[in-house]
Amino acid sequence: MSQTAKIVLNENEHDLPVVTGSENENAIDISKLRASTGYITIDPGYKNTGATTSAITFLDGEKGILRYRGYPIEQLAANASFMEVAYLLIYGELPNAVELQLFEGSIKRHTLVHEDMKRFFEAYPAKAHPMGVLSSMVSSFATFYPESQNPDRNSEAINLTIHRLIAKLPTLAAWSYKNSMRHPFMYPKNHLNYCENFLNMMFAMPTEDYNIDPVIADAINKLLILHADHEQNCSTSTVRIVGSSQANLYSSISAGICALWGPLHGGANQKVIEMLLKIHIDGGNVDKWVEKAKDKNDPFRLMGFGHRVYKNFDPRAKIIKKSCDDVLEKLGVDDPLLDIAKKLEKVALEDEYFKERNLYPNVDFYSGIIYKALRIPTEMFTVMFAIGRLPGWIAQWKEMTENGEPIGRPRQIYTGHGNRDYVDVAKR
Ligand code: SDX
Image (cartoon, rainbow, N blue to C red; front, top):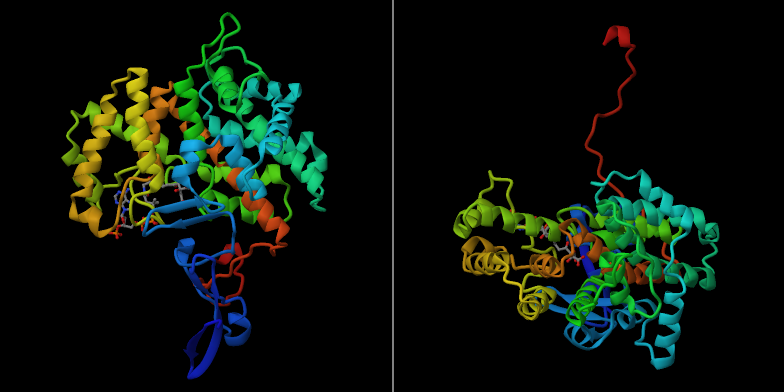
């Protein structure tokens, strides 16, 4: 029997329907609230507000559960390829062998970027942050593929755009790195798989082949899977709201890249490494920095700690922390920043301030350590997050489009001046 919520306003009772999801989460449906009461709700940062219903990702912040289309992240990270997970998120089911072969074959056919776009890179300064390059390049795709702007949302055209995006993002990412080094661009090679291709474009040189270490390729595969989707986070909500205006998928993804860049979101992985380096240079006094993070008068925060939803361990952080030890050992890397990270985690998790606020390491806390060991430059860390999150952004945009959701337009409560008349500048 469906529940209802009862609210009393000005002595009038109003019944509001309750929505219950497949994992027994409950929400009060306020879509008719203003029409029936004249009231809206307000919730800065949408901390308690659901924007949609979705069948893509389920996470339970209290229990530290994360599943893509019902599959636990632990099983996908241990057994799947990133291409399988991309297919699962976007089309709803794990591909069979033929579906996977066709999907990977199509992706391989779209890895090249239009030669005219290569000239764009020449205009960027060497120190251009790759996230700024990536968002503008992805937005420019819409000008090279004008058919993507048709709002009729026919699935053939959308599918082509989806495959082009997944295929070209690693090429753009690697070329933005090569451009920053003023090194020649390396072209995709179709005999390599998705992660190997990215590594080859990043680190190969025309003068010599790059030996792809399977340990590194496997670590990249696992990291991309762990970042692939995370329900209605800041950048995904951005992709959905831009797409809700019937803007094309390239523009929506470009907006998501911009939102992810923020240091409170995907940009945190770069900030974590910078923070650990600062603590290391400062002598490694972890207690001092934990105290700074607790001090309200100090702007310093423990980057990679805390989460809007997880009030327990971020399951991705657990997996990445374990991979840290494995990958660094296999690569023979001994990174003092990993020791500092572990000490920081231990001190913070025993501290009342962090315990009271349920602040645990999140996905960004350890990922930078692995990227660093894989020789990925620090400024490319958030780009790695974007490559991983792309299938999730696409899946969420596709779901919103297929469900015919209305254009996103939140309300507000006005707190400015009341009505007043214009005064001529001579009299002000
Ligand atoms: C991602 O949403 C997602 O799913 C995102 C993501 C994804 O996969 O898409 O998981 C990826 O963005 C992970 C988060 C990466 N960001 C960081 O690591 C930056 C550091 N973390 C914080 O800025 C913060 O924890 C947020 C932004 C992640 C969450 O902030 P909230 O939910 O708005 O919580 P809040 O800022 O209101 O904090 C609650 C309290 C506050 O103290 P009080 O006012 O109660 O005294 O906890 C404190 C905060 O000051 N706090 C921290 C802290 N994070 C929160 N104090 C010190 N260090 C921190 N890192």
